[in-house]
Length: 317
Image 1 (cartoon, rainbow, N blue to C red):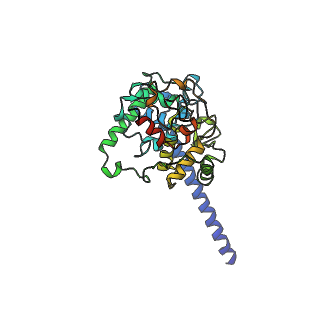
Image 2 (cartoon, rainbow, N blue to C red):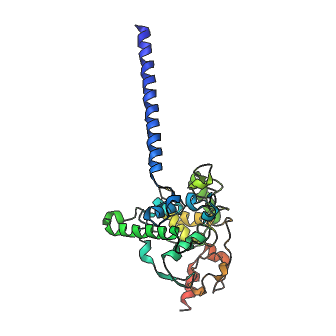
Image 3 (cartoon, rainbow, N blue to C red):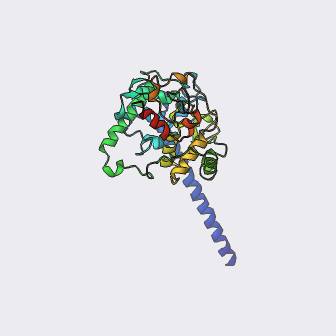
């Protein structure tokens, strides 16, 4: 009897293990079938909303530098558009794509002309993604545009509660220069766990074409120095609203300083930045690269304080 009592639990454990293994196997099979049911990007010969969603969500896989087809290597980084446009742009708030379509066409001071949504997409491709322009009539361009426009339609029918961003209070700019050394401490305490102590991010797999779980913040595989995120105030607003991911709780000063620390590192260099902003009076006060229509030092344009620069330009009006 005692032997029987010992064996019964062992049989129970074995049966439980078999059931767990079977359940895991079933999940794997169902997951594989689900993935196979989603059309691969290569199958899209016509523009579609779904293809646009894939391109923004899985940019590295579909258009990245490790793509097996050299003609499809549009980006110079293995990041995804969704690295910044979180939840593939579907979350209300900072860098959401839900309302992006209704903002275009509009005048771009950086280009010195009115641009449409396709121009804006190519701006991201060549700056934030450190890549090359898409043909305006390509399947990829039209699909991304269709997806973003569909998001705008989705936003229009959302209830007021769902349209509200779930974010901390809007970033308020400190009236001082940013402190890079203090930003390093903020980074080590809040950011390194995801982005790495070296800021190089965490790849999703050994295969770089799978992109990043957490993107690099500087270095050769990050956004280039012509991207909007290299502007201190732009980066600080995003960081305050969204970071740390899932629990954005940094103060204004912490977001300000850690943005300065992030942008104090080397990153890819975009050529011909001197042609940006044909009218230099339209250049943002925190633009980190010259020329300027003022005599404030480049370090102040990069780190602040920015109010004296604003006051100067107001005096020119």
